[in-house]
Image (cartoon, rainbow, N blue to C red; front, side, top):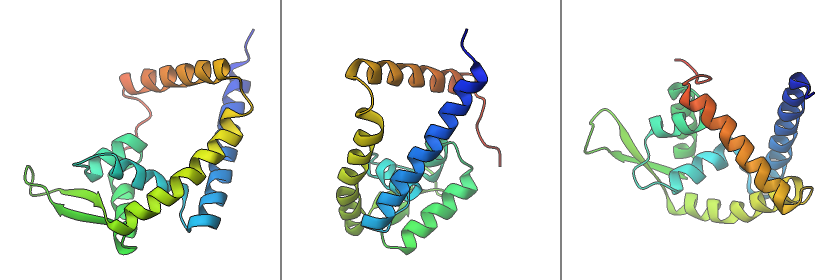
Length: 150
């Protein structure tokens, strides 16, 4: 019988250590945190990204997301432009410097993922893990639980 508490512990400890090793590599090679990388990746992948879109995708508060975007904007990696659909919000985009940083950091991030996620598993096991984690995430999102408030 599967020990759910042990699965939880292993999942959380693995995620924490993976996040830490990714962060160490990004910081050393690109002066970037994992959170900043994720923001840049999401903004760079959408034409009309709003702070609310980021907050929903990452599952953090709008306030924390807005502060993170402010820091990216101050660094010169992200710009805001008026949202023609809603004057109270802005649309986010990568600057040339932000795009260059994302392009440089992406291979580093992918190589670390390959080392610590892909290499230890067979391709079949990785596919099964991906499907299982996607299902678990979808279950929480469909139930509208686990989202930050505020």
